[in-house]
Length: 197
Ligand SMILES: [Zn+2]
Image 1: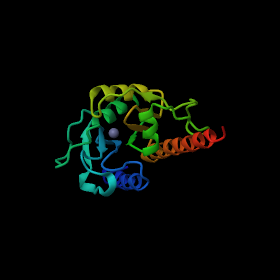
Image 2: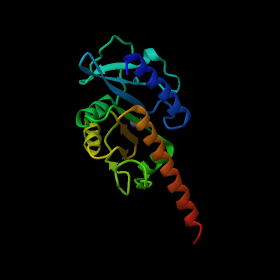
Image 3: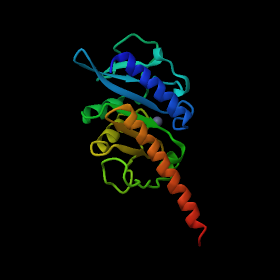
């Protein structure tokens, strides 16, 4: 994909995630890794803005060290280090989606494991793994998340939210929806079962 197409894809996906309720307020951030003249670049959503109504000029392009490649009034998301560390550890991955989807995030705050529904994704794990709490934007969080994602495609950040990765943005978006759906089903099931006794 060309740079312009990538930026358009980030915009449409940002609006989609917001409308689905997966990135309320100004939470959440997404990125795509791509190659331009043999250099690896990352197109990422900006810091401090809601994904609700992002426009193309607000998308930031950085190199693999987080330096701006093109002049911009915007700063990359405060979680840029997390995105870059994931790309450095997973060469097969070209997209990262970080959401604060309310039900999965409720599980993250309660430190209640979310069951991995059968038939979704290549990894046969019973639960979506947790990453311990570190402050958002910290190096520690970036390191812990990228380490956990070496063998996973989705993780729950304790007291924070969710990170999903994919070969492309659609794949990572689908996983973000899937975890919210899984958490919702588990939540409803728990309530219905509790009333049986
Ligand atoms: Zn976050």
